[in-house]
Length: 212
Image (cartoon, rainbow, N blue to C red; front, side, top):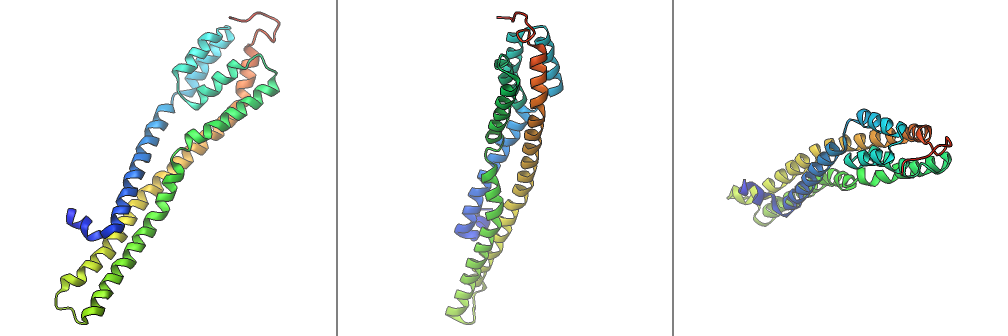
């Protein structure tokens, strides 16, 4: 394995560094998406029950216990329940938009790695081929095949390395982009539902008193 890496040359080291970076991003994103993917229907039912009973502090506590974009929207909506509906809707839309950077964290770097890895592999192919032709240019007929094999090995190894890094990176990048787009679309669709729920449960707008 070490011999394989050494034969790949400097370009392979760069590809390996990118592969480590991609692995860190992928693992971090998988953990994050798993952490925020709770049972939204159950959470919504619990919040709805608390709101209809006028237990706003309890509803906020439930939101704090569930770390997800949906619970964040719920909490912001509850905290701004005294405002007019159109202002609530704008605040929730802004809050949903602010979740995008958290969801897209690292995806730009992952996409970049997926694009440049095969290009680096191609660069290694070119430099390795140049070394091989350099040997032929200096000696004409090569009596020692090992001298020529060094350049050829670098060309082939870097090509393989670039492809091996790029393929899984592209797969995970597309997976994360799809998941993020689905979450953001769902958040946008939930804004109106949240506004209706919060205002339907608000006793202040019904002329009643609210829990302190």
